[in-house]
Length: 300
Image (cartoon, rainbow, N blue to C red; front, top):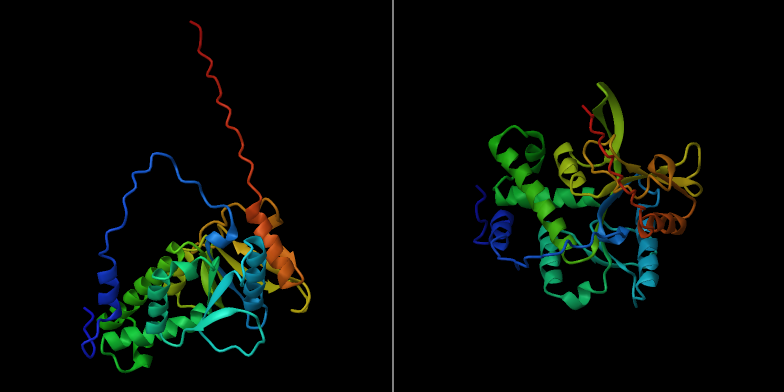
């Protein structure tokens, strides 16, 4: 069990305390309308450094600003690592895990600010996770961070990773519950997966398997931003949605597949990529009418 450090509540005790709040009970009689826009989802975009993930999120902010007639960019960055690009983004630097937790706490208490945001951007999740490891280790009174990441079979280390997964999901879901969606950015890594009985290498977010599974299962879709075959990164690229082949992510909501073969959106500029992505969600999917077949009764 996590202990208190210097008399302050640990991340675990603080999360458990906040989970004891009784929420409103509505007793809805009619089914709630399902969201149909990209900015109301929890989604992830991953790719190699420099491919344009943050730039895509910046362009998304401009598109949302225009769509909702906002005074500022429609995205808000939780910036987890320093960037040297001259981008026009609204951001808070998330240098530590307690800062991340405090940001969500204060956002919950500031609805006027939240109303100016249409999508939170965590840039990048793989820079945020080590900050969480540091805090969890501090809570568990583990001094050697290197040991905590290697000795995964020890009891305290297993508890630490479990707490990190729970805490990470908890904070992301709290952000999503404020109204806007959450866009998670990550670098990429390759790992071995089994597909149709064979071991193959697959590009995924640059996270440990357990954290990747926890994040992937909460995402409406995971998009791989990559170069199109043989193309330069300043030219043709694509957003490839991971569907049923990816066992760690949900289906892509059926939004991209009907419009783009194999769920791959080609684009040249980030602005074009954002426009095509949003159009997939803004177009209603035609529902196919189910025709009931009349059963023929045999005449004796």
